[in-house]
Amino acid sequence: MTGSRMLRRALVLGGLFAVLAVVGSVAWATTSASAKFVACARKSGGALRLVAAAKDCRKTERAVIWSANGQPGPRGPAGPKGAAGQDGADGLDGVDGLDGDDGDDGLDGLDGLDGAPGPASEPKWHYVFKTTTADPSTTTSVFSDACTSPLPPQAVNGGYKLTSAAAAFVRVISTAPEGIGATASRWEVQFENTSGSPQPVTVWVLCATGTAG
Image (tube, rainbow, N blue to C red; front, side):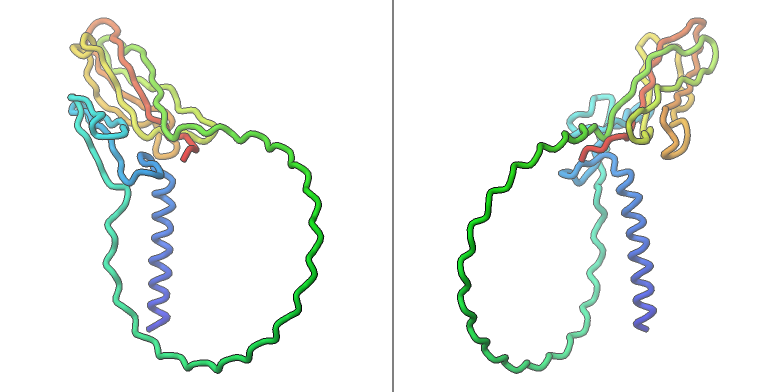
């Protein structure tokens, strides 16, 4: 019975460590001083953008907040009380040792050399914008510029922006990352331009690339 319980506990702990590793690799909206994610979702299109607080959302957006920490699990049952151990016998008092002679003062050490400056930290998140045009009278896929970083970048969100004039002729068919998971480095938006002339469009991507805490 005890061996089976220990095996189940080891499996549960192994699964927990695997989940924590995945969560740690995409811990993308919080900082060490925060316990929640805050984003603004466009009422039209649903595109997200990360913000510091819900008050930063515009009238055309609604705040989305979710906790970074799950609910604590139920408390386990108390284990059986162990038997009281026997009192040990008092040991004999040791003999006091003689006081040693005072040692000589040591020489002052040499000053160490200045260390090399450390690498500059970078933000965990940054946006990349690209403004171009949607071809006339057709459906066009427009890609953002790629995320770049000393570390492998990842496109975690993206979206688009249209001028009021272009919005009368341009309809969005789809918006998604180019690739899956860690392979995505650009954002793709598919526009349908019903006018006979090119229309200006802006595509953006949110990159997760940084090493700052």
